[in-house]
Image (cartoon, rainbow, N blue to C red; front, side, top):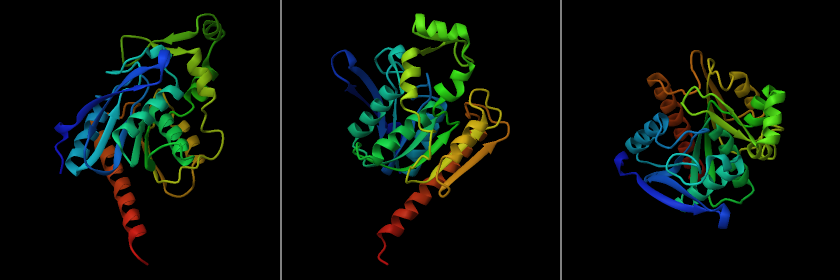
Length: 274
């Protein structure tokens, strides 16, 4: 059993020259596969769910990794420069710098999109690690095209063309959300829901039905594009987007524990002589 207070801070530089940015991440040593926390848009690695999973990993002796994307939390870089490609690159770099050989990716909201992009990279053998499982919380893959673009007004489109960004009030911060033209353009080049998503690993999805930001129908659309086996979805009738209430955290822990147990059993079965 590991002490969750022993998680260690690290920094790496991702990108070169003008693209270089300092990325902060933290690790807790333990058995694999390593649990990797991938936060959402404007979230940081010290949020409620990440801290809860750190404690869970420590109690179970599991390896745990979390990071701040550029422009988030303790990392450097401008938030306005962020795109799905850049943030995926940073997550990949942090996992590889930590030396994790196999991972279970826990992606929250936009983090689920990044998790699915990492799976695609791993399946094409461009990562130094394998993805053994996915847990997707209020998943928002392709949100720029599927959730935002249909709602853009003529004024929004003009602002994107003229100023390169739009803003909207945030329910979670006094500062408004900023969405850039680069984010939309890059998002359109990184879509994952256009066809069947081959992951090659078990997946657990948790979605609140009272989520005002990502409707549960989006999670159902995602479910239809995933393989029919080894994929489960749990709907929380009164769950919101954050899924950070005590009962939500307990449910996340139970579902992740079950997912890890299934992965462990599969590993044992694969290594047992027939």
